[in-house]
Image 1 (spheres, one colour):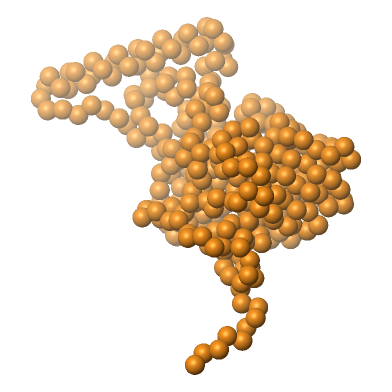
Image 2 (tube, helix red, strand yellow):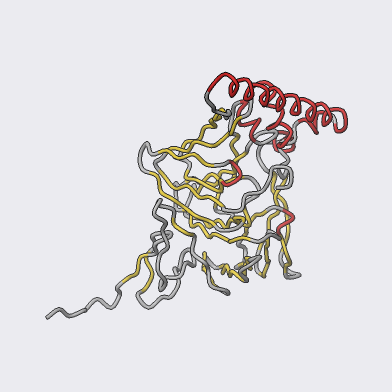
Length: 321
C-alpha cells in the first residue's frame, strides 16, 4: 500500500513549466489555470491559457492582475520603487502618486522610419497603473528567466518589468521590406540579471509551438507574435501562377500576369503621385508593386528551431495595423 507523505507536492504548469503548490488553481508565474485540460492541436500548436478574470501574478513586491476577456486589461499594483516600461498609448489609467518618466528606445531614427515609438514610458511605484491595447484579443504573460532572450513583433508589448533589457532587431533583405512596408522589426527582451516578466497582446487567439532542432515552419508575417531568440527567421517568396494544359492555357496565364503587373504599376504610380515616397512605402502598395518586377507571389516567414514560436489568429493588415 502506497502512502503519500510529501506535503509539498508541486504541480507543473503546461504553459511556462513552472512549479506551483498542489493546492494552487493557477500558476504562480504566468497565471495559467492548473485545473483545466491542456489544449493542443494535432499539428502541435498549444492554445494560450485563457486567464481567468482577476487572475493575479506576483513579481517582486508588485502584483499583476488580468481583468476582462474580450478587450483584456493588465492592472499592475507596483511595489515601492519598482518600475515597469511600456508604449505611451497603452496606459489606461494610473494612481495620482505613480511617478512617470521616459526612457529612450534604442535605434534612434531607424525606429521613426519604421513607425515605432521613439521613447517608452516608465511608471514607478508605489501605486496602481493599468494597461490595455484597445483591441480584442488575449493577454499572454511570459516569465523570462535569467539569460533568456525573446523576440516580439513590434507594438505587441503591453508592459514589461524594468529588470528586462530592451533592444530591437530588423529582418534584413528586400523581401522583408516588400512584405511589410519599411521592414519588419522585432522587439528584443533579455533578462540579463535575474528574471523578468513580459505581458503581450495578441489579436484574436494566441497559440504557441516548440520547434525541435532544425524543425522549420512558414508563417504569414501578420500572424507572427513572438519567438525565442535562438529561433532563426528568413523571408521566403512563393511564386504564384495559373497552371493549365495546352498552349491556350499558357497564353491565358501570360495575359493575366501582364494585366496584374499593369494594375500593380498603376497603383504604385498613383500612390507615389498622391502621397510621395511615403505612399509608395506603405505595406499594401509595396506588396502589390513588387509584382511589377517579380510577378505575383506570397511572402512568408520561415522560422527554424530550436525554440518557442507564438502566433496570433487575427493578424492585422499592414495598412491598418
